[in-house]
Amino acid sequence: MLSHIVLGFAMAAALALGIGLLNCFLISMFQMWGTLWNVVTRPLLLLSGVMLMVDSLPPQWRDVLLWNPLVHVVAETRTGFYHGYDPSYVSPVYVFGVSLVTGTVGLLFLWRFHRYILEN
Image 1 (cartoon, rainbow, N blue to C red):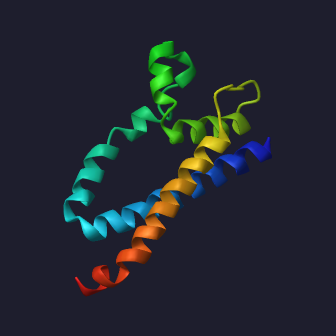
Image 2: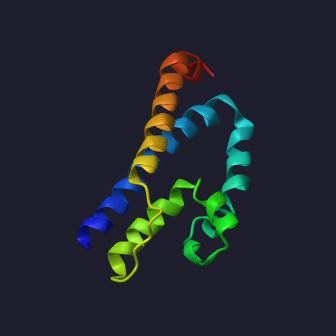
């Protein structure tokens, strides 16, 4: 079960890197983005399946929450700790894909605007 924990942590690290690179650019270019990001991510703890089980929600809510990549990270890590827990909705490909897209976009924008960011 250690493999599920390691995979969950790797998914979290990749997602943090991708979102972090994109936020690095957005916060550097748009000062208001830092404040907006803080407000938007406040309810993330409740919407990521940390406090409640996504499996126990009605299907229409579960389908909406599955767009949140953190739900997949939490469920994969939880699989490593609880023997009987086996969520069928976990998709590492989705999490790594979101990480790759956000990280690539963040790097491209940082590469394009790095002189402007350093001058201001």
